[in-house]
Length: 183
Image (cartoon, rainbow, N blue to C red; front, side):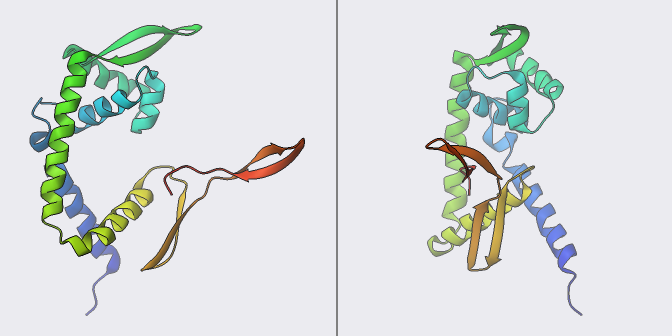
């Protein structure tokens, strides 16, 4: 009797989620932060001075959920919110504190060490295929992703599905392909 492919995928994806959960805050973050807090702290270091709405969008959560996370990070002196963003006095920018940068550097070192441990268990010859498979999985799972996957293994291609946008070339309108940079 043949296996149900959907059931097999569901079981393996659930197993992957459990495994990734074990590589979460307890192993990575000795600072006692949740995986969401770690992720937002790392994102904030790259998007210094971002508005709460922009950070929420990047994290795939609502602005109110982002505010709750930031309140916890602020209570630990890892971030600070600064009221007033340009002409909009209600908007808040978020900055990472010196302590936040120290914690982020610690998290980065721990993630690097954990990644090296995981990679050491994967044979060198299998790493390129596994990385390609992880990239495909990320593209498929990412909400609102624009990347399109075509072909059959091993000839798999990823292309950007963003629509063409009008562009001016020497005074006339043409259509230029947008690229997301991920595919």
